[in-house]
Length: 149
Picture 1 (spheres, rainbow, N blue to C red):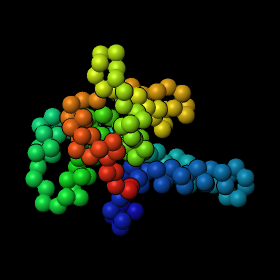
Picture 2: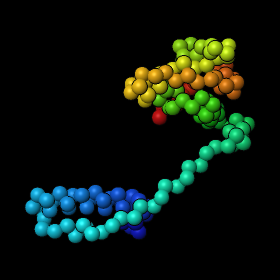
Picture 3: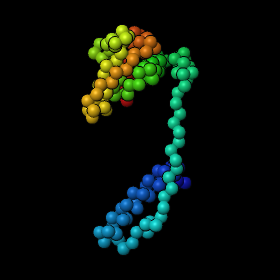
Picture 4: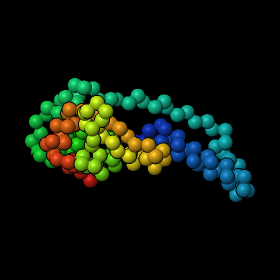
C-alpha cells in the first residue's frame, strides 16, 4: 500500500487496524475461522512537531508586496486571525459593530461566543483587539472580506 499509493506509515497502519477489527468481528460471529492479523502488531510513528509562525514571518507577510489584490485580502484576513486567534467559522460571522466593545482598560476588545465552545460551555471569548488588528478593521470596515472555504 505504501509503495503503490505513496501513503505514510500511520495511514497504512490505521487501515490495517480497521481490517484487524473487522476480522476480529468476523471470527467472533463465526463468519471466519481465523484472524490472520491477530498477532500482527502495529508501530505508529510519533507525531511531528508543529511549526509555528514567528513574529518575523508575520512581519514578512504583512510587508509582502502582493501583485494581485485578492491575495492581499486573503493575507490580511489570515493576519487578522493571527492577531485575534479567531477560527475561520468565527471570523466568517464576525462583525465589529456587534462584537467589539471597550474593556475595563478602556481599549477595544472582542466579546464573542465562539462557535465551538459556546455550544458546549456557554462561555464567551474575550480577546484583546491589538493595534494591528484594529488597523485591518479600519481598512476593511466592520467586516473582513473572508473568502469562502
